[in-house]
Length: 268
Image (cartoon, rainbow, N blue to C red; front, side, top):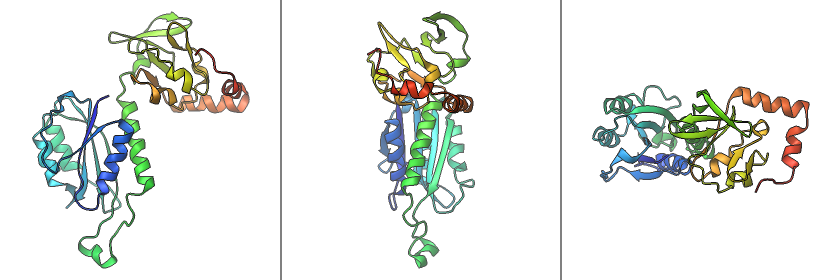
């Protein structure tokens, strides 16, 4: 998923810290709008816009930049750093611009940022040491959540089963063939059989012969190592509360997960 994050961080670098955390999580391009860059956004699947909150809205330069873009049908997320403890309606002006330009709001994130203006000068600043490590961790979690939400296989478990291979259901996702039952899904059409998922999976879910298949998805613990390491984004883990309960019950009432974890590597 090709992603770009456009930001303005003009005061204490608060917004840049958050933007960098998100860019690292999404392997995104990171571009400041300070010099009004000329960028063609048509080739991006996900676009992020963020700045500090000034006078109850995003930075006016960022708003002007966004108002000049064509966002028709694009997934867009908004982020900000702010002085006050609650988000309120601070994102509303930028959201209106994005929606007017045809963008689809995929998510919003905001956290506190250090401020030493106005009355806060008397206290030598407010929200000292913010954003902190926890804020940046939350920003990364938000970004990874967006990636899962917008993954091409996010809804494939709802598609009709068209057949089976070695007992694994096969579904169509557009023109692609996808293997998987309820938890682990692998796009066989984009998979390059590199075997990285086989190597990193601690539960030995995947087997590689002439192709890689998720043979033992009941043992999946939703760690996402396979999906994170896949070079072609061909793996999707259907994370859910029910799947979490399944893992908890299996661990509580049997040692099958422990045995799978401790077993020898196989299939690669």
